[in-house]
Length: 248
Ligand code: 13P
Image 1 (tube, rainbow, N blue to C red):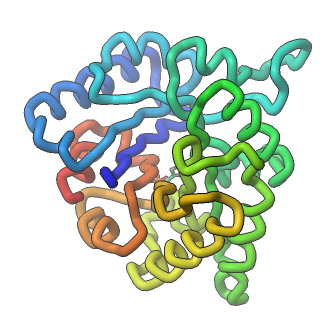
Image 2 (cartoon, rainbow, N blue to C red; image 1 turned 90 degrees about the vertical axis):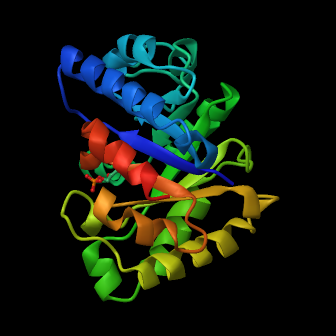
């Protein structure tokens, strides 16, 4: 399977910076079209940047949202529905990112509900899981990740409409990456557990996220059961984002 190189732009940048970043990414891919043989590209800007960013993207780069409402539509002030995300031609939505779990107290149940409405709209849900540093130190990382994943996955999940992103919380934005042994152990474990929930679990893409950069991408992509990366900081510079793809 091709690697998915996914950029999570988080809450960064002005409109003009987002447009420039999109233009630079497209230009960089046009300069190295062979990257498309091994990689699919996805960018996930803030909601209101989605439409103008998409206008700059070519077919080579898909677009997604960073979240969606658990509700279908109606009186939910501040929310953006999966239908609205689909309506602006997004193909993916990131759900259950650890920043949402931490700062907005999103539960597995809520993530599951969001994934269901996303699937109803034919969006691919990128469901994020990952342990904290304390949980890893206590040897609980597999238990934590299994619970998050199995409780967050709805019955509608298939290998086609679901991606799992393993992002150890302590590796996000810290410059600390998990060792390749740790990533291998967790990705093998996730693949095995997924079979309890999804037919054809071998075809589900498993992304690693947490301080991925051009300098460490090659060793991460070489790990068994790593099918791409969910990239935060390094996705805000076209050179680094494409540099990561070059390592795959
Ligand atoms: P960083 O790449 O900045 O560590 O962020 C990872 C992440 O949270 C992607 O969703």
